[in-house]
Image (tube, rainbow, N blue to C red):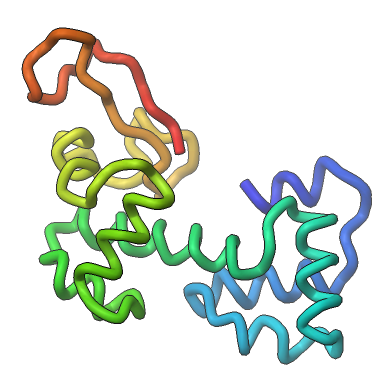
Length: 151
């Protein structure tokens, strides 16, 4: 999504493209992303907001969330997901997921109904971008005919 935005808009600075690639490759390491730009942290934040639409930290949070959701979908226990993705603990992981999606990790897993990342429900191959919300008034079980929620 971020790369597509860069490609649709005006030409992005090579430093922004490089930092974005480093954030992706390093699962959101801000220090590594900033190291190769030669810019101050303030300049990097300003350029990211201007050219990507989010700060480097915001992008890193989204990348970390994607990594965590893929691990959850693979059946990894939430405590292990939290540790593998660099969250301080499982509670920190749960708060961050809730802040970014409005749902708990277990609720996301339940609403995905066991679908793997990149399923027909998702917009990006290999990524978890959507889940099925139950119809209004329906039981709490995921419903294949429900409306899609994209994040």
